[in-house]
Amino acid sequence: MTFISNLHKGIVALGLALFSISASAQPKVAFTAQNMKLGDIAWNIPALARFELKNIGNQPLQILDVRTDCGCTTVNWNNSPVAPGATTTFTVSYDANTLGTFHKSIIVTTTADPSPLRFTLQGRVLREVVNFDKDFPVHIGDIRLSTDDIEFDDVNRGEQPQATLFLYNAGKKDYSPELMHLPKYLSAYAEPEVVRPGKMGKLIVTLNSNEVRNFGLTQTNIYLSRFSGDRVGADNELGTSVTLLPHFTQAEKDNKLAPKASIPTSIDLGSFGDKEELRGTLLLTNNGQSPLKVNMLQVYKRGINVSLSKGTLKPGATAKLKISITKSSEAQRGNPRILLITNDPHLPKITIEVKTKK
Image (cartoon, rainbow, N blue to C red):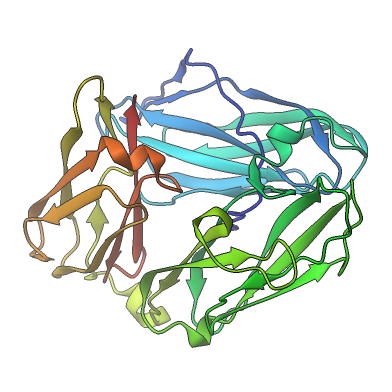
């Protein structure tokens, strides 16, 4: 499963009209429009789109397989079961390395129907950037960035994944990109080393997972230098996050008596309106044959508070996950999400998306 987290592009707003597929099995699927139109996108800057599947049946839905018709297209998804009434999100990335029009397919197989679902991406890749606000929405001085939030997700100890931060020099002078206050586990270099006015460049950030101390979520801020001798501050701050997964042996994965975690991967808390805080509750269930332990419970964004009624669940037991989010969290960087690290060898990491409306 591939994750491309830090290549920001305009996320395609998909229609709310749902189409449903039903089968003789108990899970049933509702999904958003199958054809995703990305429009004109910039050459060599990956474009992201999201689509959702909702389980409208009365039994858990399992995503069995997700495939693309080209190595230029990758998909990130959560392979945990989708509870009845819950929604799971697929994030699709097209690398935009080839100029001209494109039409790519994503094929999803679920337990709801033996026939796979087919989704498509289409658009046109142009050499010149057409929409700066869409391609480079973050402004730091004269430099425009593709994102201000760099994420390394689903990392195993020993891996060294890379993330790319695209930039555009909107100033009148040559610019030498540099990241400041990098922690020990991050390193970065620029291509090219000098970006001329009106030109694009990129910063390649490498994670050394052996230098990350703890499993679960590690977050810190780094800073983009706008000029030689620049200082750090809130106006040139970038966020970084690393999710390091615990290691399980093959014997542990094959153990039929292992714990088995089940919880919805999203929750919609509704609209804030005049409220300063929204609250909700999800149920975590152990469907396995041995105790389920929640080793870590963390949040990706300030303004979210969570509590779990119990940290260890016997087989068949259920725990309440209480969630609250403040209105002020809307101003914080990143998507509101909750992270659970468990001893389930098939689901060591559970990410829950918290949805709200203004």
